[in-house]
Length: 146
Image: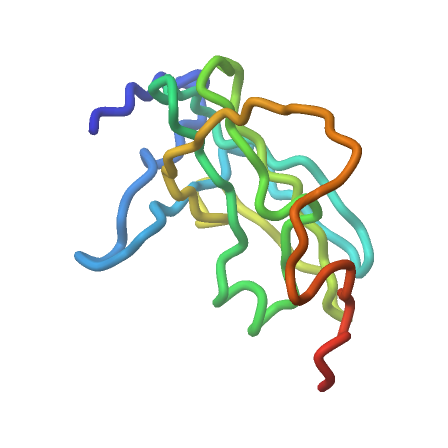
């Protein structure tokens, strides 16, 4: 599958999204920053990537946290996974949050998230008075134990 990528910031370009290993499901996204950005503990900021993408109809880009940033620095994504719809053509941004105890400094070109391209299906909804029965029914939030 081909995904068209447009660079939006020529003055401080970041690397193009890329798969870091042969078996990687997600391609890394990079920060496109004019100057360093500091994320204080508990703070969240929208970090630009400097790119826009044309994702084919029937697919989405899922923006997910990087496990290394999560375990080493406590950096996550507020709305993870984020969704890039097939009809969106604006700049891809990543809403990072610092769950850690120390400030975290981001620099231009650093890896900030990963993007997985996934197929999506549109559902047809039908309102009914009753739903088909299951063994589980309404059980949730730990109903099977710990």
